[in-house]
Length: 59
Image (cartoon, rainbow, N blue to C red; front, side, top):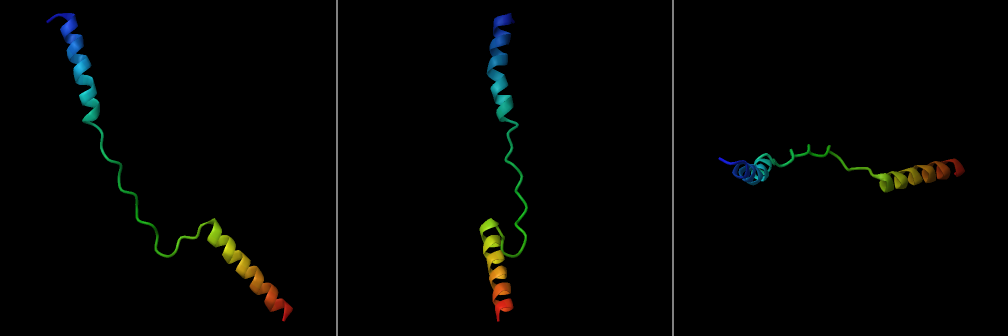
């Protein structure tokens, strides 16, 4: 075989070897039980606690 044919075969085979190794990413673990507390929910909870303490001290 000539060098040109070898290079042509290599150029044609290399992309298929890359495609053959692609696997889907692993499944992420499920979220923990209970409600997720993000920043907004945490801020509302904190405001409620502050309001409750203020109301309790005032009366």
